[in-house]
Length: 306
Image (cartoon, rainbow, N blue to C red; front, side, top):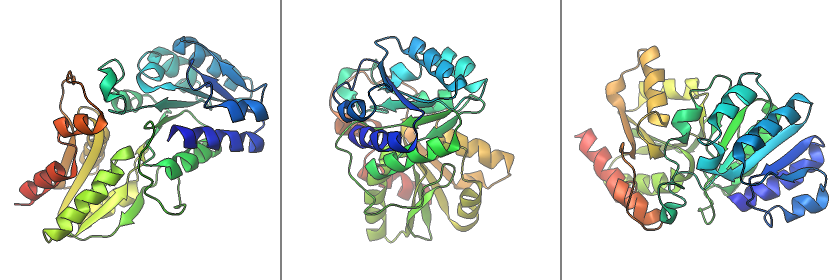
């Protein structure tokens, strides 16, 4: 996903002469092609993420289109005050990109895990929260965020994520993408959980459960029309995310449904419990510990349908 991001911003740099890339002392080789094509528009801001965000806000206020990029917890939690006051309060066109979100950096421990970022950033007025599912959605998300021209957080995985889309879908911030149809259960997959969601749907189909799968790539704003239809038509609506249950996409859907008097007994939220993960291992092992794997996901859904 990070390679797709680097390629996307390099190409979009031609279309947007005011696009400026800013990195927190990572990805220096990753952005070599960007630097070759746009040598005056790349800044290595060092391990100083709060300062990078402040500089980005200044550039945006001066008419430029900055994108900040570094490892997710360092580009979100570490510089939350700057995002809140320097970017969101004046409603500036800064794109904050976090790489290695969720459990992508599972082996590096809790300092590099990012299971709270959606919860934190979606509370900020004017912020848009976008979680692409694969490299195709990454490219489209960056393009649409530039079109939007408002504070936007893009949550990336790291590398090696399966490419789910075989062609470009219609991508618009705030509008989900239907991946497959089904009449019993709808799985709203957030970010890189789309591949496990589709595999879960295959398992459910074998159990006689018709499952609709949606890429819910935007957590803020939510797709009001799509959610309304799902709660009206489906027996069960599942939100699946590699994020803590507290304040995440499931919570966002819960808040949305409560405000609109939806039948929230139809809602099942699957994510991580309210605790740090202290065990070591790769991303697949970490997901298994949290139950974010197809067999466990299906168990939860089938148990709820009973």
